[in-house]
Length: 208
Image (cartoon, rainbow, N blue to C red; front, side, top):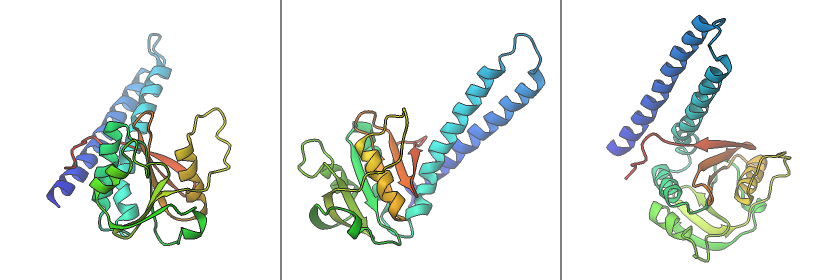
């Protein structure tokens, strides 16, 4: 519990720091508008980057709020996706909430195992027969692995959206489940909720 408290305190500090920087940069912009050598567009781009950083970090902070009611092992999930991200091991994890998802997925291999970060990481280890598809979590149990999710029919335009991300968004469009994704190509973490994809990052990667 102490490690968990330290982690979320670090996240709040990180968000607060970036908000303070945005306030300072915005005031600098206000005072410098009209100066010949001042690049307003450059400053706006920097502020946009800071807002993106805040959104990404806040996503991890609020991940607890989204799933803590439905599994007491949410910190195990957080550990797993961070470790998978560091190793660039692709992953897809469904956390069932109020609505049952069984009728919307093509069932894979039954596990019925107690949820743990080590088991999640072993499933998504490259070469493991179960690493393709999604793990389904209900409460504190991993129900099954290698599940196939419905793909989103959204038009993403020029944006490159992989199969894992399309599957996560697709299921989130049909249920209130929260679906976590780790990109195999970049290691980036994100989650899908209500048809929208949110990036995840943390200022402190030590969740051990």
